[in-house]
Amino acid sequence: MNAALLLAVSMLGTAAGLYGIPWCKESLLLTVLMSVIGGSMGILDTGGNVMALNTWGSEAGPHMQALHFSFAAGAFLAPILATVDSGGSKSEELARAEKTNQSVLTPVPTASAASTTPAPRDHQDGNFLWSYIIIGTYILFISVFFFVLYSKTNSARDKSKASAQKGKRAKHHWPLIGLMFVFFLFYVGAEVTYGSYVYTYAVVFAEMTESEAAALNSVFWGAFAVCRGAAIFGAAFLAPVTMIIMSLVCSVASSSALAFFAHFRASLWAGTAVYGASMATIFPSGISWIEQYTVIEGKSASLFVVGAALGEMCIPVAVGYLQGRFHDIPVVMYTAFATSVMTVLLFPVMYKLANAPQDSDSEVVSESETRKALLSNSRLTEDEEDEEEVRAWNDADFEVIEMNDKLKNSLTDTSLRISGDSPAEASLQPHPDDILGDAPVVAGGSPGRQNGNVDWEK
Image (cartoon, rainbow, N blue to C red; front, side, top):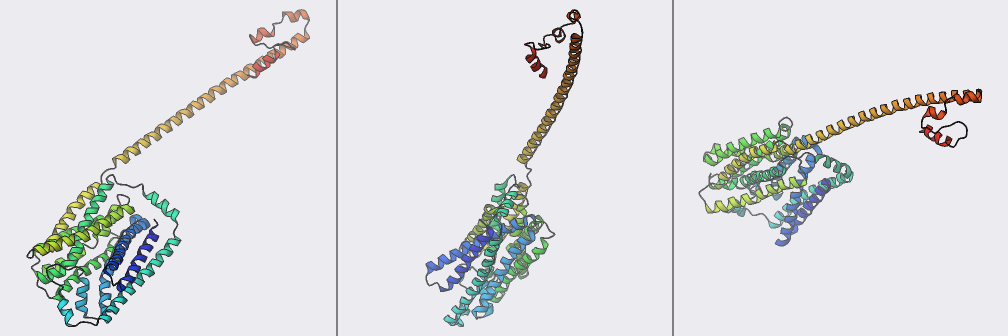
């Protein structure tokens, strides 16, 4: 399907869901609209990555970083927009908006504070209604641009470009895709888990105040967004593999500090900032890196996004369940450390598979080269044989022509002598049959004249 049309339809579905959610009075309808938005965002994530790779190819590194920076910027700005529209206390509402998921340990920390200064229900609903309308209108406006882009695209040119890109394929294509699926599962799961539970960890384990916990959460996402913005320029002169290795090293170092030294405030703040920065560039750099070794189409990119979505869905749920059962163990920090170790172990395996020599391709190339060489030699041999055959036929033709000229001359002289001499002398002249041997050519109107002309032409 055309990428621009797919993105236009998905964003149109997202806008429709956002317009309908504030008016929902039934949980079933709300579930349907939320599912529509979730599916549309999944299509947007997949289609955006594929469209960037198809548009810029091997030079898609900075553009891929810019695409994922827009995700981080939107995640950072949307809660602020909702906070401004809510009309409540900015620090409390920002903490509530950024805290996207809560652990089962304690109730929402801001519930008691919010209950002391309740806002009028109609005023609060009206402000949140405007938040949905503003974001939905923005997305609808962008979907119109994608429809215009679809009307301007040349499908035949896109298909020919896509078919030209299908030739590059790694030897272990599907094992490489499968490992990248698992890699993104752990990476995105760790990112969402830490961003979701760091507020609760700061309040319960680090005994921070609500404002400090909200600031710690903002440090994580702020470092995440800033590092993705810086990666746009860094991708212009750094290879994707270099950016991945730097991110993985920083991820292991920071998660180790968080898992084993988080009881120190300085270690918690610094580790959170470095961990957020190290998680920023892995996803776009991973897609840019694997595109250098094998062709990435819609199926492959969708597998990456499915793996990321599974990690985003399953790992936070598992952490929340375990944290509810083991209250004294910082499961969040240990999960960050374990997922970082898994990604560090997976990447060398993927690198080895990606750089495996193309045995099958070399055999095909050598076979095709041998075949071409044999065909070229056979053509040369045939040409040489043709030249020798033509040369032999030319020599034979010249010999026949010379012999015919001699025969004609001899016959002409003989006929002249016969016509000019006496009958007695003519009887002494040799007969033309003796001159020509077995050739049945005779003077005058003898019966062998016609056959003689035929043999003469041959």
